[in-house]
Amino acid sequence: MAFESLSEKLNAVFRNLRGKGKLSEEDVKAALREVRMALLEADVNFRVVKQFVNSIQERAVGEEVMNGLNPAQMVIKIVDEELTSLMGSETTEIAFQPGKAITVIMMCGLQGSGKTTTAAKLAGKLKTKGKNSLLAALDVYRPGAVKQLQVNGEKVGVPVFAMEDCRDPKIIAAEAVKYAGTHNCNVVFLDTAGRLQIDDEMMQELEEIKAAVEVHQTLLVVDAMTGQEAVNVAQTFNDRIGIDGVILSKMDGDTRGGAALSVKAVTGKPILYIGMGEKLSDLEQFYPDRMANRILGMGDVLTLIDKAQEALDEEDEKKTKEMSGRLKKGRFDFNDYLDSMKQMRKMGGIGSILGMMPGMGISRDQLEEAIDEKKMARIEAIVLSMTPEERANPDLLTPQRRHRIARGSGNDIAEVNRFIKQFREMQKMMKQMGNTGKRRRRNPFGGFGGPGGLGGFGGPGRGGFRF
Image (tube, rainbow, N blue to C red; front, side):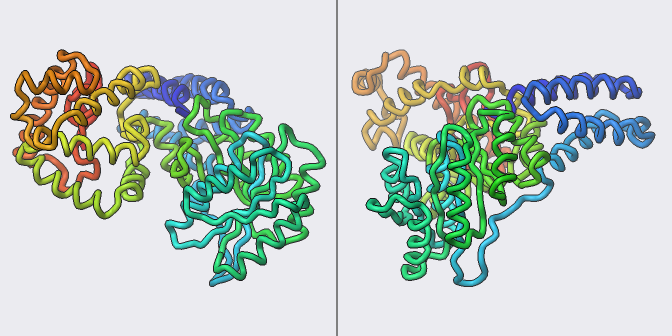
C-alpha cells in the first residue's frame, strides 16, 4: 500500500524523539535529516523535500516547542500540519455548472494510467450524488477502448455515447454534448485517447477538443506507481493544455507515495480523488489532512466511516442493528458471520479497513501474513456447507455433522474443528463485551471475525481489533 515504507521510517524517527525527555536543537536537526532521507526515498521531488524540511525546522526549533511539556508531540504535530499543507490543506471538489447547465469534464492522461476506468468510477460516484452523467468515448485509436468504456458504463449504470463510424474526437465531443442536452444529462465525461508517452500530436488533439466544446474541468489521471514521473507528466499537461485537478490511480499498489506529496507543490493543482483498487467503487475523495494522518500512522477513521456509510444499504443497516443486539447477548451465529464478511467486502476487505485504523502499525508483510484470503475462502466454504439450521444454531454441530461439513467444503476435519472452537471463543468474548457495556452503540462492522477467529479481525498471534 502507498506510503507504507515512508510511514514506517517516519514512525521510527518519532519513536526516537519520544524517548527523549527534552529535545535539543541538534536532536531536531538529526530527526529532520532522517525525515529528509525518508521523503527522498519515497520519490518526493527534491525541491519539495528541501522546502518542507526547512519549514518544519523553522517552527520546531522555537523556544515554545523546545521548552514545551511534550516537545516530541509538538514536533509530530508540526510535521502533520506541514504534510497537510504540502498536499493542499483543503479538500477540492469538482466545480459544476449551476442549475441544470451541462458540466463538461475532459479526462486525459497517458495510456495505461487507468483513465477510462477512472472516468467510469467517477461517473458512478457522481450518480450516487444525484448527477446524471454521460460517458463519451473519444479514444478512436486503442483497440477495445470504446468497448471497455461501454462495459464499465453498464456496470455503474451510466450511459455511454460513441460514434463508431467517426474517427474525429472533436466531432464526437461536440455531438456528445448535444446528446446530453436532449437526454437530461448534466455531466459529460470526455474519455480522450492516451499515448505511451507525451507527444505533440496528443496535446494538439486535446487542444482541438477544448476548442470544439466548452470544457469546464480538465482532470488528469496519473499512475501513482510511476512516482516522480507522475509529477513530471502532470507538470507537462498543465503547461500545455491547463488542468484543473489530478486523480491518482493505483494508490493501493506498491507505490512509494511521492506523487501524492509532490504534485500539488510542483503544479499548484489539487488532487481530487485517489484510486484504491480495481473495483469501480474503489475511488476515494482526497482529503489532505486524512492522508497526512495515514502517513503518520494515526489512521483515517473518518474515511473508514464514509466507506461504511456508502457500502451499507438500508438492508445492511437493519441487519447490523439486529446483529448488534444479538452480539450483546452472545448470540452471534454463522449467518451473522457470513453477513459481516459480505459487509467487509463491500468496504474493500479487511486489508483496506486495517489500513485506516489508528495505531495498528502493521506492515504489508505482517498484513499478508495475518490476512490469508485463501484461508478466509476456506472458512467461508465451511459455513456454506452447513444447513440453515446448523448456521443458526452452532450447538447442533455434532462430530458426525462436522465430518459431513468437512467433506462438503473440501477441508480437513481438524480445520473444521479448529474454526468452530475459535468461533465459540469469539461468541464468549462478544458476550463479555456486551455485558461490560464498553461496546460502542453503533458498530457498522457488526463485530466480524476473520480466519483467526479472535474477535473482530482474526490473525495469527493477534488479539482481535475492537471498535
